[in-house]
Image 1 (cartoon, rainbow, N blue to C red):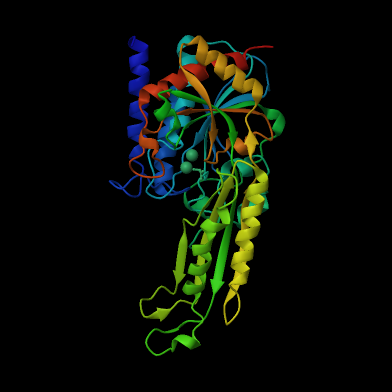
Image 2: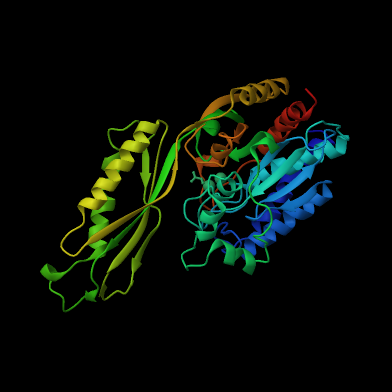
Length: 413
Ligand code: HGY
Ligand code: MN
Ligand code: MN
């Protein structure tokens, strides 16, 4: 590696290590919830790097963070490059930050080379992609593009009933700042993300050019029964919310059976109330996350899930279902994909097409602009866990590809 290459890889490793410090679960992975002290720590680090790399720093009314390098055309739409910087509970250090860091380092190369360009380059770091604090996920991008209205955004509450606006204010962020981003202000969208699966590593290919992202739906199911004494309530006089909820959960894998093979269904979050060892549960709240590469299968499994849940009602059991997110499968922009393939090839970096089983903010942007994604390998295909790891050399590959692509996208037509 030549000098700047080595420093690029080392800078990437430093960024990862610095951002990794901002976790609520040190030693047990990255837990960085939106608007938390960990969010603020990471945000401050990213702002410092944006300023160091000559970018104008701005936050919007949702807490999304932007670093802009103006081009020569006044008021022209931006080429956006970045990702999200929140995490799942006890997640990894690369899911999200790898993409934000790639954006930062592309901007640094523009600055280092004194690149003159017509269209602005805008590095971004979005909030609440994971939905670990507020319902649904992809919240920063949905709010920014108006898919989630400002009113709906303001109504979102976390598990303690704290609203987004209250949480922003408590974190010293300003929800009165402009939020909605006009479609005409974005020329293209680039995002690097870790693959979060085994394909690239298994194939020995360092870069994936994403062609499509699965469709996904998330619903929250609340099962209500009747609390009672675990010792004195006969079995035939119980309306046990947890037994009813467990029967629903146990049937869900069958709901995915017979659908297209990429169809998956997951119950990742389940809370029991009042959660006493000697109390019959009177309420259980859980999420169902379901995905497929083909929309008809998303719809079919969603319908089956709701049917199963509602069939559990009766004998003192009530069931409520709340739709929290629904996104059809999305294809990445063909011209951006071709550009990424061309620049990878020109740099001699092996690449392959790859589909995403994970959801990404690119799904939201794809309806508003030309969106493209690159994947880099995840060791052992692991993600959403402390073991998540990606070689900084692969992130550096993606930076070089995006640097060439961003130069092409920001130059005058
Ligand atoms: O859930 C996902 O696929 C993404 O990690 N938010
Ligand atoms: Mn992610
Ligand atoms: Mn994730």
